[in-house]
Length: 506
Image: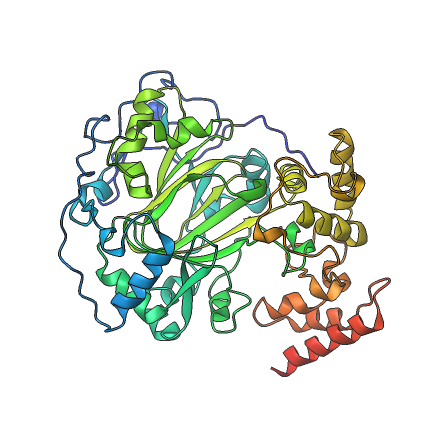
């Protein structure tokens, strides 16, 4: 179904601490003082003034003054040149040697600073995977748009051993990974042996961050797909109704060196996300969707000579926000190896890597957020919306719901409006480059994640998706090979069967 109820019910999650320290034992509070629900209503005392989480005064930032740092020595002769090349491409406002000018390498206190839960600052709710069924998660978490950290959710993954920096270097030593983008959106890649060298020795305030989107398309990187599985709580992937060449990016393999992170933002198109950590430690901050960009980003509090990278945000911008807006409800928490965090659509969130951290994350559209995702996509990504709607009509009952939403809002798709008329907030990004005539034969669609949206998805849709999902299950391959889609041409049938045979013989 669509449109989950929004009334929150109490849940028996763990008692929550008033202080959460990254590298020391937590301090617990008595049960009567602990917040034991995951409701969005402010906890007791939420209206009181929130003291800054920093022991430093909220209107000062002792870390902001540039401080000289000794030149970094790398193990590989070519590492320095590769790092310089990627830094020059990523940031044109500063020179490569200025990436450490604020001296955060020497300020470990910023990373070790405990989170203080008081006033309107509350912990991200936590629950053990053994206590959370998929049914309960859907009803009490996803449908309530409630962030949560699930403990021991991915502790069984092979990635828990295979994704250490040393193990990854051994497997992918000469494979280039994306570590940045330039101003034109061009991906900047670096061989893993050089990036691993950089991770071990870097002293940057905001280091290069490995974000690889080509896990399933790049044959050299695809073995990573065998090291993890999508957690049972996230079975849906309704954007799979758009072929892989046209759909927006949705899966990332990430390595964030110590002090790296992302500033506060919302994910695109209202999609929800899960993020699993296999190595390292992340500090998260989340704020509710109704909060304004001005309040959550706090750029008005920047002082002369300061920057607003992730570490600066957690160091002095966030404490100033708490002091200026004591009514602003802020969720904070630490994510450790084996844990998965769920970030609902449209929630503001930012992260700081307190250690060298390895993670995988995926965004999704499913029954809990389809209405939000569709209404955003149809306005912000017109061509993708058209391709998506076209395939809904061909393969899925989702078409009826999308048309109901369009009718409710009196929204006209691009093909329903006069020629040349464009929505004021429609995107002109590269993701809009897909042609309206893009091939969307059943063979081009990945059935994984569509079981609830497409009747008999594995029989109806083609086999290309199996090529991106590791070793296919023989029964699924057989079904894809033998299935016939109404209206599917002979050429598409031949193409699909040839691809399946190639996989069987691989």
